[in-house]
Each structure stands twice: as structure tokens, then as C-alpha cells.
Image (cartoon, rainbow, N blue to C red; front, side, top):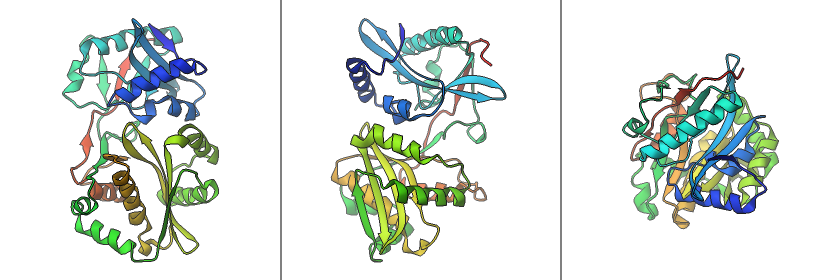
Length: 327
């Protein structure tokens, strides 16, 4: 039976968190913490329980496009996609629940490959967004995840020579790096706005980052790189399900020759080595190898340098239409 989460039920919250921790495909965007961070007016955290056992969970956000409201499960739902019965339990029950709420369309993008998608029962009609339809995709389907080798010298030998050279050069430039658990919101946000102007994206307000800190502070690290009293680069990273996740990175437009971002990334990698974290998640990219003229290519190339085993391709957004009248 589907239930909506009672956030004040501590025993239930603990039970769901345990379920999420045990599921290797669980992403931070399907966590209760991320549900609390999100600013959508209408959002739902659902779970399905059978014989006192949680079968699946799903963090849902209401979105709107072309005057149509629909539900989006970022990197969800969380269930065993190798089990056809569990997929059926999700789709049959979520479709009924959505109709009761007046929604007809559901978009999901879990960590699954194209072989796994064959487990979805054929009676459910769905459409897969094209992997290069970047205007329609809710999130990337090409993931940049670095495998961490716990020997620093061995690991640095795996990345391209340019990255090795720039990383080593950054440590000869008198930079000061810091890792702590508290965020300097004022200095971070100033660099964040500078980064948003340089890369032409719409920034969040500062309260958004304060909510992230409030929800994840026990599993959050704040990295800084300075030259004298000049901030060069900063990032907010979180540890979730045995991965370090590069959540938000910012850098100064000036002093690029000091290689602050290379220094910051290697400090994050050393943090993984020192804390036995075997995955460093740079999150996704939104272009392909040949898209050299797009504004995303520089970021693509930077992340590619660290992901020596290549990017991980997953199924893009999957859209189900169940029927309904939400508008």
C-alpha cells in the first residue's frame, strides 16, 4: 500500500533511510533530506510497504510545462529494477495514486541501462527522451564518476598528463586549501554568482544553500582554495551511500593561471583516499565528444579528465502517461 511520508515519525524516517542506504542505486536526490531541500510548492515523498517491508520509495516533485502539470522523480524511484514484480508494484500503484491526485504524466530517470528497461511490463506505454535533447532532459544521462584507487600515486598516474601536470603545478603556487564541515555562505555565494554570470545559468538564492547545509551537515564537506586573501575555488560536497558527490563548485573568473580548480579537485580526491570512499561523483555532463562548439564542452572535457574509465551512460528520462486531468 502507498503511503505519504510523515516526516515527524522518527521511526519511519529511520526505516526509510535504512532502506535507501541498502539500495545501491539510491541517489541523494531520492533522499528525505533532498525532498526537504526542494522548493517546489507541491512535492510528495511516497513509500510502498508490504508485510511491514518497504518495497520502493519515491521522491516526487510537481513540474509544469506548456500549462500541463506533471510529476518528476529525480533519479528515482528507488526499487530493484531487476525484479519485474517490484516494477509492476510501482507502476500499478503509482498510476492509481496519481489519478486520485489528478496527475496523468510521470517522468522518471533512475540509474538503469537499456537492458534493464526491458523489465518494464509491456502493458505500460512510455517514451524515452533522446539523449541529446538537452532542452527536454530533466537531468543528464551521461554520468561522470571517478573510481578511487586508495594509492595517490597510482591514481594520479591514471589521469591524462595535462591533468597530472596542472595538479602538481597547483601545489607549487603557494595556494592554501581548507576542508571543513561549515560553509562560509557569504564568500561561497559571491563566487557562485560570479560563476553563474560566466556560465550563464540562473542562480539559486542563498537560502537554498543554507537548507542544503541544514539537511546534510553531518555528511557535508566544504572545500576552499585561496591565494593569499583571494578566494580561487570552493565546493560543497556531500557523502551519500559511500560516494563523495561534487554538488556545487564555484570559481573566480580571475587568476585562472593559478589552477585553483585543479587543486580543489585533487583535495577532494585525497579526501576520498583518506576516508576510504571509492567513488567520486562529478555528476552528469550535457554534451558528447564531438560537441566542441557548445558552452558545455569545457566542463565535459574537465570531468572527462578525471573519469579515466569513461563516462557511464544510463537511460534518459522515461515518461509514462496514465491518464488524468491535472492542469
